Structure formats: C-alpha cells, structure tokens
Image (cartoon, rainbow over all chains, first blue to last red; front, side, top):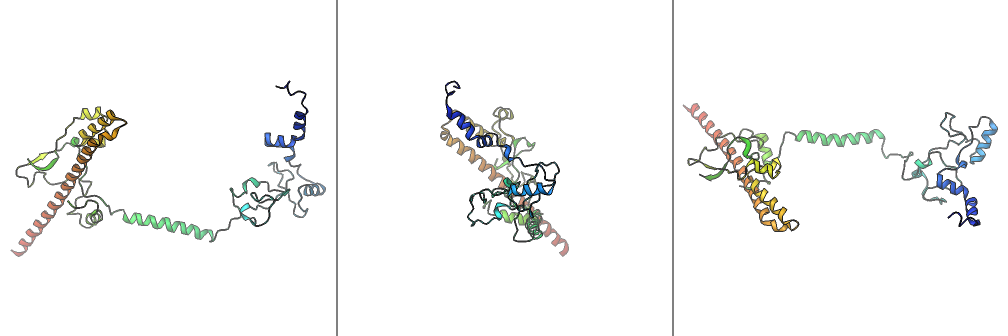
Length: 172
Length: 133
C-alpha cells in the first residue's frame, strides 16, 4: 500500500499542513498546550500575562508547588451556569468566546458538570433543618405506628408436618 | 365470612385495644379443636407424601394441603409447554384449593375469637353471681 501512494504529494502535504491538529486529535495533547515555566522576575510575569491576555494587575500564577501549572494564570472560578445565557457568545454551548483564556479546570465548570457559584434560595442550615424535619417526621410516624399491626383475620398457614392434626369444618 | 380485606383496620384496632378476646394472627389457636363437635371433625388429608414433594422440588412454603394440585398444575405445564393455556383447568383447581384453605384458616380464627368472647362472658357472669350471693 505504501508503495502505491509513494509518489503522491498529497500525503506529505496532508501530514505537514494539518500536523498540529492531527497531533492534538490523535494524541489528545500538543506541545503548545504546555504552559511555560513559573515566572520568577517581573519581566517574566509581564511576558506571561501578555501571552495569556490577562492584565498584569490581575495576573497571578498558581503556586509553584509541583502541580505543573507553570505560568498559567489563576482565573476566578466561574461556572457556565453562572454566565449570562443571553450574551452573544461565540460558542453558546460552552458559553465562551474565541481566544478566551480558560480556567485551568474549565472541563469541570461546563453546564453538565459543577456549578461552583450556586446560590441556594435559603440558608444551608434551613435546608438541612427541612431535610431532618421531613425525614424525622416520617420516622416518628412510623415509630408511632409500630405497635398497630394490620392483618387479615386468619390463623397461621397450616402445614401437615407441624406435628398436629388440622381439621376441616365438616362433621365427621 | 365477611370481607377479609375490609376488616383489616378494625382488626388492628381490636388487637391493640382488646387483646384478650382478639387472637394474634401469628399464634396458633388455643382451644381444643374438637370442642363443640360432638361427632368429631373431619381431619384435613394430605394427598402426597413428603418424598413426592421433595421429588417434585416443591418450595417449603408450597408443601401444604394443596401440594397435590400444585404438582398436577406444574406437570401439566411441563407437558403442554408452550401451550400452557391448556392447563387452565389445573390452575383453577389449584387456586380454588388455596382459596378453600384460606377460608378454613379464617374460620379457625373466627372460632377462636368467638370462644374467647364466650369464655369472657361466662367469667363475668360467674363474678356477678358471686357478688349477688
């Protein structure tokens, strides 16, 4: 097969022209995804902020504790649920714009995943109290009803091997 | 006989508030089964032996006085499969037997209840006589 397509230029072109995409799709990773090293000087910080499109006042990298984030900026956690659904996003499904710098855990903040900014309609202690009020109320009802047994008025089932004679109601 | 389902709540009430005259459904009858039958009663007859029931692989809960009907029904099903609708006669016979069995159990319960009521009435009558004399 290789010998048949050996002289074909389109093969080399296809390989060359699509190489970053092909690599990313085939191997789920691309060397361009890797962040730079942790910025130590002010110049490195400014360069990194420019690279990621973040204002230098807001730029703050992740702590250099070996997690491998490098110079990637520490962005606020805003889940997709909390973003404006009526804003004309370039990608409405993910609620993101083209070229937008993403949070490092962006895959966990989409609409089908976490909603880290969720606000309940009541304080948490009230919700917990409601839960225990309902379950405790049901448990109290069940415990109260324990001594009252409903049953069909009949003696226990009669089996021939119980060591006693069972009688029908016909006269012998 | 009454309605065995409709009286379920009142059974609950009676067992809790009048346990002396209401028999517990989990306990066997306490009176002599031949009390009040001068000619005796016909004993219930087991049509199949234990060995036959073991051979037919009947579950323990089905080894009652209807076991022979159940064995017939299962044999018919096995012979007629997949046309098991031909076994409607055997099925009906088995279910009728189970129904009659339950009727006997209900009658035994009601007998126990009435005898207890009668015993209580006799005892209170005796107490009344001792107070009067």
